[in-house]
Amino acid sequence: MELNSGDTAWVLASTALVLIMTPGLAFFYGGMTKAKTTLNMMMMSFASIAVVSVLWVIYGFSLAFGNSGSGLYGAFSLSGLTDAVGELTNNGGVYGIPLLAFAGFQLMFAVITPALISGAIADRAKFSTWIIFVALWVTIVYFPVAHWVFDFGDADADGNITGNGWLAARGVLDFAGGTAVHINAGAAGLALAIVLGRRLGFKKNPNRPHNLPLVLMGAGLLWFGWFGFNAGSALGATDTAALALLNTQVATAAGLAGWLITEKLRDGHPTSLGAASGAVAGLVAITPACAFIAPWAAVVLGLIAGIVCALAVGLKYKLNYDDSLDVVGVHLVGGLIGCLFIGFFGTTQVNSFSANGVFYGGGWELLGKQALGAFSVLAYSFIVTLILGFLLEKTIGFRVSKEQELEGVDVAQHLESAYDFEGNLGGTFSGGASLKHKVAAKSDEEVSA
Image (tube, rainbow, N blue to C red; front, top):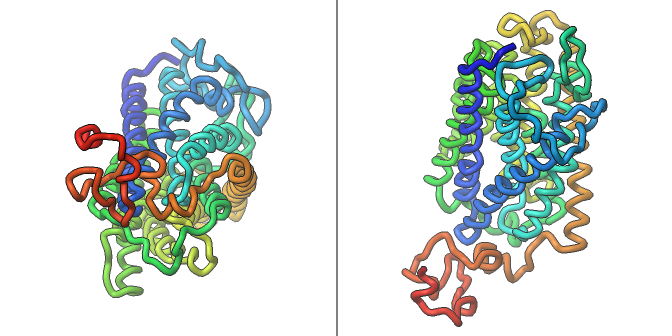
């Protein structure tokens, strides 16, 4: 196998597309929060970029894709990428792309996954504890789970494979991260929402998005970047990448439509927030299935995801957990739908590396494998995150004080506000929190700067 410049170019471009998804998520989440917590919400996504990128180079890539001989974790090495220059990617077979390109592409998946979790604990988390949580969580949850799902092992000249993840070895199909990214993040978000508890005034005071144009812009950036997320996972400019790209587009459109139809029938009117949320629900659901199902089935999947996720986000009020920005209702539920859908509609007619599901004469075997992958990741992520979040809360504290929550986490944690309604920070901040006591020692000129 020789270096393929076309495939390499596609993977490099896809890497950049996936990176833009995390700032897009910051806009999406930032617009959905209260005005006085916007910056903190966005900072949680940007902190994920910083923390995970550094850890990935030090030991993360090795822990996810190193060959330890175990299906549960890779090789813990502090120099996993040191000798990667000039090597081609070997992941269940040799690809004509540099190993560093593959490592960079997979890094972006590792970056956005903890950022997704942050939406479940909006308006009430300490920023310093969040940074520590991200470092610990990716180490003990994401890196091992990525090994389970994405590591197809090192293939030798005879085709023998060693060091593959235990779910990959069992034939679980997840093309771009329905398990490792979305179910993983959704389960972790539920655990942290339980640990941190409900926001003040939950179910009493409406927590409406403060900036819907920001939400729509964020959803648009996510949609744009998701083509790299899904089609880039083909690791080449191939017909599989084309299938994944088309399926991503039509499933997302159908998810948007499904959510709006549900709102119209249930509430009497479709909303811009529903359009953005439905698009993301479609994106989440198609992620694991994008290269394994026919385009017409992708439309069905997106429609189902839009409808079911629109209904699922209301469960938090019935079950009394405060998932602030619907990480559970969209990412956990949407990820489960997408993974299990493959068990019914997966087909080798569109991809020889797929498997036939129930409706293509394959019986129930594939569905059983998909359920194994989905629920094992869900259980592991939820349990470990619950323990980790509880330990952080009881030691250094994870939730801000009642006074800081009322004041707004932007001011309490960052001494900043997203909006200057009175022309300077000496006035009153949106939500009624005064900044004067914070900046008494500073001149108006210094504060404005």
